[in-house]
Amino acid sequence: MAVIHHTTLTPTKVEILAAWLPSRPWYRGTTAAPELAKAGGFRLDDPEGEVGIEFLVVTDGSDGAAPAYLTPLTYRGAPLDGAEAALLGTMEHGVLGKRWVYDGAHDPALVGQLLALLAGRAVAQAQSESDVPDPTVEVRTVAAGVPARLPDVTETAEATVLAAAQGAPVTLSLTRVLRPGSAAGDDVRGQVLARWSAPDGAEPHGAFAVLRGPAR
Image 1 (cartoon, one colour):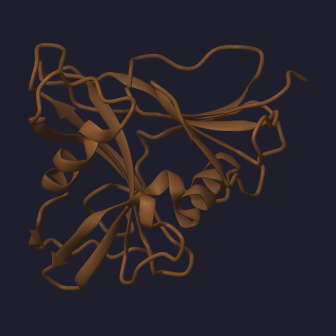
Image 2 (cartoon, helix red, strand yellow):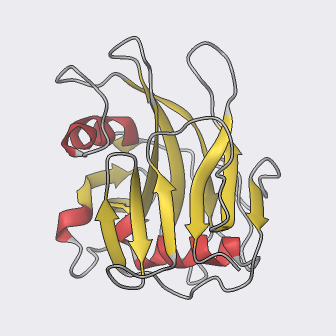
């Protein structure tokens, strides 16, 4: 069980993301400085109790479109070997001390627990409370065969796509630019859907992650 500490973070998550997002191929901003606001998300527990796993949504108010971005993050007490390219930065946590913040799409702890969520072996947790399931997160699994790991990672203009190997038939897409609605198609094996808060007060509901494979 992850224990949520309500304490200070220096720099904040939003400040770290504001420096990182413009470098991403799926970033839609037209100005040099994003104006980010937290807009929702959920957490997953690390079975080892060592890694913080969060699916954080932020909206960008720097232009009229105000896109919502899914930023899956992991928080570690020491650097993750071989993941230098996925490091967003470090922060000082008021209780836990120095934390290394990673793009969770490149962290096996997050990927493994997301696959466990799709397979029914993990439960989405509330973003800001300890040991409280989040019933608003919907998991749809339409076919068996959730893989155990997906180490190959590719960035596109819309998503981060994970696969067992380049060109593999089974993929897991993390939707980076969120839109309302569920994923469709005969190749959809499962998906994770959740809500986020739009700047106009609406609460869209859409696919955060989609598992695809050959139609059965």
